[in-house]
Image 1 (cartoon, rainbow, N blue to C red):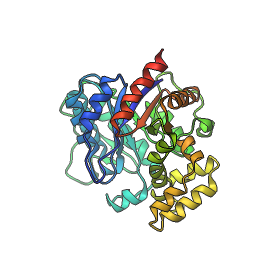
Image 2: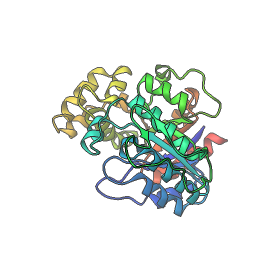
Image 3: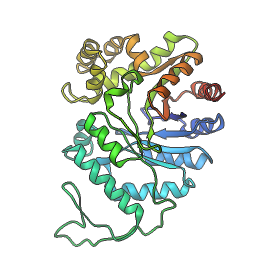
Length: 332
């Protein structure tokens, strides 16, 4: 099982993703990933990382599909892959209705239909076999009745088969991911509940790569407290009560009462109270939090559950150094 690091996105204060990525490369981690919400742009961050590293794989985890046309995403992927010498992994996600409709002004619609068509177009652009045409329910290229014409990507990609990953939560989305993607980027994944996702038989090359909130500290309580606010944010505030995919998932793990309490506080803007409702049991189920030895042992559970990569979500230099120690111990 490979260990990567997920540097997330800029919040209110930018962090030095290049320095963190270089450290991850130096300690031997497999990959470094960045994300986006409604602030920093992931394609810019990953390009900056590519310019400051030479060996480590780089990925977007995730780009929001409704934020860009499929052709624009394919252009970015081909460009970044060239600039990085073939190190790019394209992670995509449907996003949630609050951001898709509130920030991008795009109807949320059917994420399954959008995802299937989007990836088909991205792959067609990168394949560069013929001018691009597509007739779908969400996308039509060229636009019917307009003055556009079918075009072919005018740069030859370094790789026509850039790996495409999908962030997916529900059973239908996970099934679609298995069908059309090269890897899966689940968040708040619990290895003890892996059967819940219905992965079944997978291609040997398919990468199951959970993105896992991570804090390594000899003081287990302190480590738990680092990730507790993020769990509260995802479970409590990422969508209305009836349309929060993270909350639905964690409820299915058996934390119904805890999720209700977290959402109740978060949706009233009481994030400190929501954080206080995140129990130690929830942290231990959803995150890697504790001393090096505990994290090493916990990674074994992910391995046994079928994960082929773990992407540790952290911006902390010491935690990245400790991940290098964990990697060395696991490899022995």
